[in-house]
Image (cartoon, rainbow, N blue to C red; front, side, top):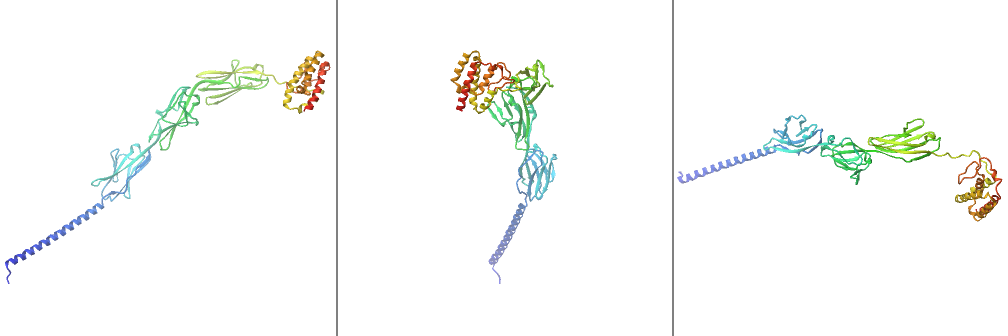
Length: 474
């Protein structure tokens, strides 16, 4: 059976259409597969790209020490790592090769870490360092190397180790130092004393490169320390000795010195001077030198000196004026000491006391109070003068007796009064007596006592009555 022409055309068109649809589906499937493959490949490539695992730390090192800068890179693959000093614009290393001509740089690699070594770091090594990977585009990171320098005092710009100034003048002492960070300068005295700043303020520590001292006095003489610190050990210091110059001065503790003949005596002077003075003694325009006769002793402490002169076995020719002299380049001065003779105290050889008076004296005086003894002794000496005057006539003795009777309770010293009266009657007998001492004779009672006047005897009677009343009062 034969098909009609119209139906055959429709059937052919339907088959052709189905074939095109199958072709389009197949093409779409192929495109989708190709796209997926490309995405997978791109993902795998991105996962394998180099990356930095951690940042580069900032490193601080003292000059002359070694420093290390790490750069940790993962998935480096076939790429290369380079180190660059940014401040110098210098390539230091590429991969395992050192490019810089500075031999202090080197590179090591271990466990994805590229370690840059800087040996014996210099101040020029301070700055930023870049670790770079040659990807497209390039990747990099930066770290900082700090090189610190301990302080160092610049002698050429500072005050010398020893400086001199005249007293009452001004002076500025300077101390300069370098280092990194910039050092701080402080001043202090070596002996721990305060520093007078502008004469109004005293401080133990002064801050600043320049220490100003105004109207310097001798008390400010000594060693000063300039200390530089910047937090980097060690700190450094400089010792500056300040000398204050002035002409000599002398003062004498005792300008009059007395001593008996035959003894030793020591005289002394104190002097201050700077520069150091020549000090010596002069007697009768002749310099005194150490000998058996003279002993000299000099003690020095800074600008002070203490000079002593001992004169042995004083004789008549040793008494007089001694001069202590101090002389330096700025002037001369002297002090004078007069050595004079004083008598030796008399020493009795034999004591023979009057029996009557001494027995009373030994029994009564120890029982009296000190204040009563002092007041009575004064009146006893007045009585002695009266007795001596009354020995010329009996009428004078009678009047003296009448006068003494009115004050016998307060002005008579038992025993002692009689003793001193006898001393007055004895005239020029040996054995003088100082006031307040017991009466004694060195030979025998004087003959004048046996021939004393009736007035004196009458006075002694009143003395006995006074003693009796005094005993009753005590």
